[in-house]
Length: 181
Image 1 (cartoon, one colour):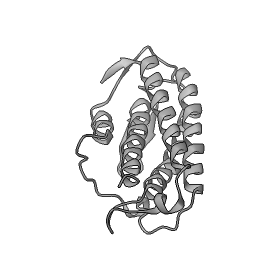
Image 2: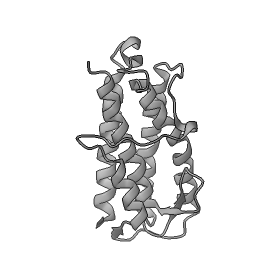
Image 3: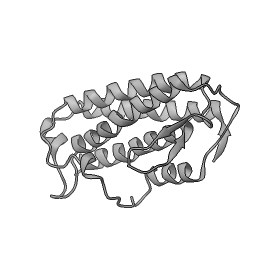
């Protein structure tokens, strides 16, 4: 994937605003609806958001830290890395979602969750918007971040933003599906 850095950041901000709106819509639903599951192994809407919160708890500080330490200034064009593009694209929702195994430390199934989960998610998305704003002054290509799995690979900052935000999009769709009978 290749685009201008400005276009990429604008697209990611728009997606994040959409995620905030969806989360605010979930706040209008009853606790019973937010906690319902279609099957024993499926996630409720709150479990979907808690899964995203667990990832946000890793990626938001990682992105912040790497941006603060970066000495590389922004460039006009962002060119995705091979691995980063693969990870990001695999997260986008599709008509029939491909199932992925969730790491145990990121699997919220059976957790006792409340509306606070939604508020935490919204706060994380507000933080993401702040980071995206600051990213306009940092190289999306040369600034690198760690990933949440113990694998000795770093992704370009632009790919990390894409991965996290596309992952949010995937599970927001799943959360909305969980509340639909």
